[in-house]
Image (cartoon, rainbow, N blue to C red; front, top):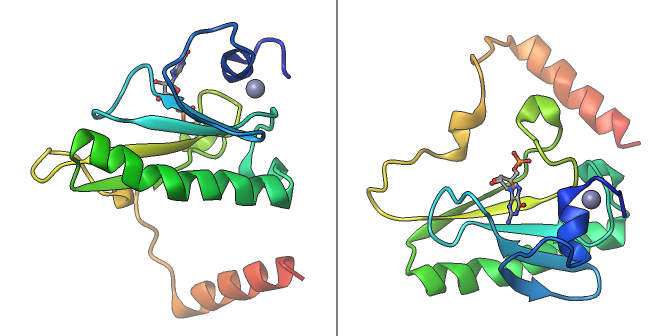
Length: 142
Ligand code: 5GP
Ligand code: ZN
């Protein structure tokens, strides 16, 4: 638990939330300022700031919960689709430094945007640069 973390306080019941799912490692609750009806946050109960900080088993539990919740949420609000994503780090828009996945139900003609809209200016990368990036990623994985 991180003392001044609002999501840790939700896990501990100190701040009320509309909880929709709970197990021993994961909790999910409705976003207080929803982008659409049914907008849900899925979080590990333990405090970790970034996705890469999660132990592998907790990352698997988190995705397992997201996988279960998606259809339940879409059905509850009669959505046509959903965007599922993480703001992973401050530069990516993460405001609460406790890992949380967003499930944002989407509706035909709702005026929203696809996840491609999150990027800034698109880079103009050469084939050589793309090859280099792919090689660096692969070698970082060992
Ligand atoms: P972020 O930008 O960190 O990915 O998103 C944080 C999300 O948490 C926002 O969508 C915001 O509406 C939501 N949020 C912030 N404080 C609270 C709270 O106290 N309760 C709930 N349910 N959601 C919150
Ligand atoms: Zn926390």
